[in-house]
Length: 270
Image (tube, rainbow, N blue to C red; front, top):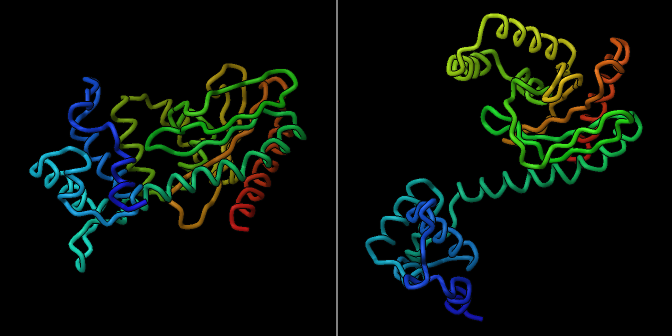
């Protein structure tokens, strides 16, 4: 199949007559994403004329979309042919997705084994700005099963996973985070003091500890997963009922989550 026929097949039925835009979405953004998908799926190179023809866009709209994507480094122009190919920023987005999926695939069996051995709820999450996004949960707790749907977002400061990620930041970056998040939410001095104490604990012990995380009566320990130069900030946590967690038990659970995080890190690099 030729590149032109591949392109036509890929976008068959997406011409102007068939594009009924959902009023809750952006037509300009949708067109820009169509351009990226077209170039990626046809393994570019495509000219402006080819892009506009296949997508059913005017030359003016096509030029503006491509110019914007090129300016943002999502598309690049091959100087030898004058045609467009996928740019470095598109690769970075794809790499981020790939790394997240790899982390989840590697962590799942390790968390399942740890959960069954320790009898705890296990979680895996990644940072998204000021939130932690839950990717996976596994419950082996004998008394309380906590389940969170993949994609659930919770503030970083409310979870042991989030605290472990924040504790790994430099003082400058942590201050920037606090200034941005806490000022916007006008938190009190008591909350700030508690947060600082939690960060100090995490830096001293290597893992974070938080009581009543999301659910009353639950204590959770969390540890960041180091991933070298990756932009992905991932962490894991173990949770169990507070009344079943003595200080000695929590200390051992902290050691266990650090060991589990190290196992995941080693598996990611092997």
